[in-house]
Every structure is written in C-alpha cells, then in structure tokens.
Image (cartoon, rainbow, N blue to C red; front, side, top):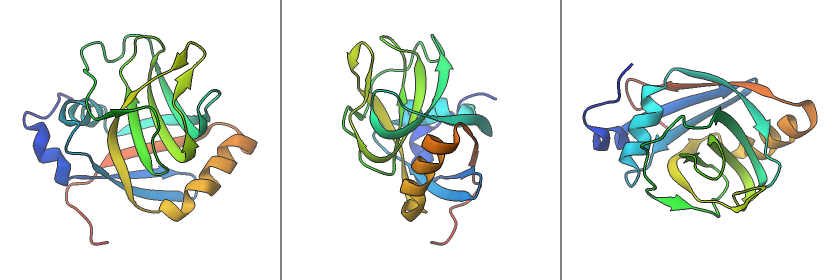
Length: 154
C-alpha cells in the first residue's frame, strides 16, 4: 500500500485501535503530515503492544532499525501526555510507535529521545490506565490499527 498523496487530508481521518477488550478512536495531528502518511501506509496494522522499559507509563510497538529512514522529525516531543501516540523514526534506537497511558518521559537506554506526535485519542481515554496495567502485568497484547473511511459520530 502506498502513502497517501495528500497527507494534510489525513487530519480529518480517524483511526480505530483495538487491543483485547479495549477500543479507542484516535485522530491524526495536523502538524505531522509525513508521519501520518507513513503510518497510514502500514494500515491495517496488526502488531503487539509491550510495556516500555525506560519511558514510564506507555506501551510500544517495535519496528526494528531503519523502518522509517526518511521520516523527519515533525511535531516531536519527549514528554507526551496520556492519550498521545508517537512515532519515533529511528536513529539512537529502533523505529517504534509509543502509545502513552500516563506520565511519560520518552527515552531509551542511550538517554532521552523525541518522537513525532501523530495521533491523539479522541474516544476511549478512560480505558488508558487499565490498558497499561494489563500490558504491564499480563504481557504483550495484540493490537489492530485501522483507518476508518469516515469520521464516526462521537
């Protein structure tokens, strides 16, 4: 699947995220159009969420080294809020998606990192802490990201 030709149009699109009993809707951030196009090209995306080791209250999806070699930093942060989803293009650590459920200071064993804030949860945020506890205590959980064809009513 190729990346969309008009990344800014993605800011009105919604992504459904399902992991076990947890269901979320997230909207693309307008300040990360290239990251949004990269992520959209991977959808539908099936992966596993695992708990972070260095960053606090977040879960992540590793993609390995070099999975997004041309992705620039845009709308990047080291201190995301609960409900923000980030893409780290790689460099000091492997390419990854970071799904924040609480206090997070994004880092690797090499030190602090910054990643592109690409999605924000717009529905289901009340489930974030329970999702984090589930991944922490029960281990890796399957996750599915799917781009919806139209924005649902909230």
